[in-house]
Image 1 (spheres, rainbow, N blue to C red):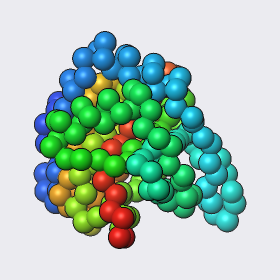
Image 2: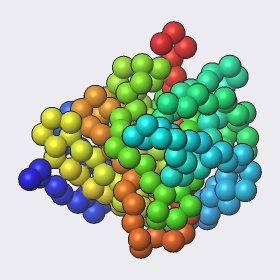
Image 3: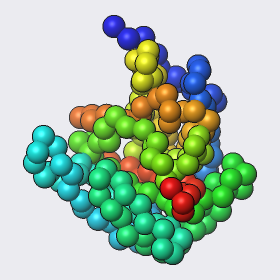
Image 4: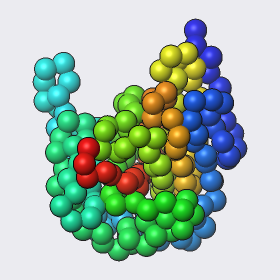
Length: 203
């Protein structure tokens, strides 16, 4: 059986092979509430289909891609046409850039409507993300469990991502670790996740 541990607090989550730093109070409760309300109502949410076992099925969440002009992104095998930087997304990007010291030219937004909406095991290791990408992931709304699994040792690390938290993944995190949002029957309220990234145009 692979080693599994739960991380109750913020800070560095990974013992080796990359970095994943959780900042639980990145946004105040009021700020987080405002960002959630604004993004929930103003984002042009899309429902896409994915191919699973040879069949097209609805993706188990809603999503949308926002980016600088002419910067498309293929995610889960689906080409995404970029939407513009609406408010309050532009302000959230600025806050993440200030905190991390990195610039971001794209953001993938996912809406998990209930605990039945999920994200399967994956790494953000597409060539367009560049080597050792810095990915800033903001969680808004219902708290969900986030799992890492090492690709070689299969060690699993789990952490709760609270409302208003920021998770910064960097270094070789995407090379060595998979991550997911698992299904749960206990969460009925929606969650919005925003992952800011810097795509390279010559990938």
